Length: 174
Image (cartoon, helix red, strand yellow):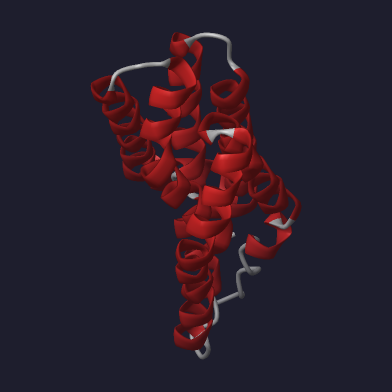
């Protein structure tokens, strides 16, 4: 999940503005503005994340985040208008916001192994940032930046499928 969250965020920061410019013949300024709204959506959801997680729990938060990301990515990649694609970027940003933080939180559940588990989990995020750019760059050359973003939906679907891994441990009686 940290890999997928990092892949999603990193792909947006690297390719979203370019996908707007190349996919809609938009100005560089418009591309930057779409990226800014993606980042603002992520930031707002992260600030409210504790409320979402408290209300839904970690597993349902991951499921909702993955599904929102898929919906936003699909809307951006396949929406026929710039306005719809922009809305897709905002939805994607809302969905991507909590994937990494929730997965890292789950990795730290066991106090005896928290440091090792968190270091391993965050290594997956670093791995995504190292491996993704050349692979995604190849896809951009092949299918275009806008449609390449749709491939991130696979990682989001895996988050939904793997969501039981972040269930909170049963509370011990006092």
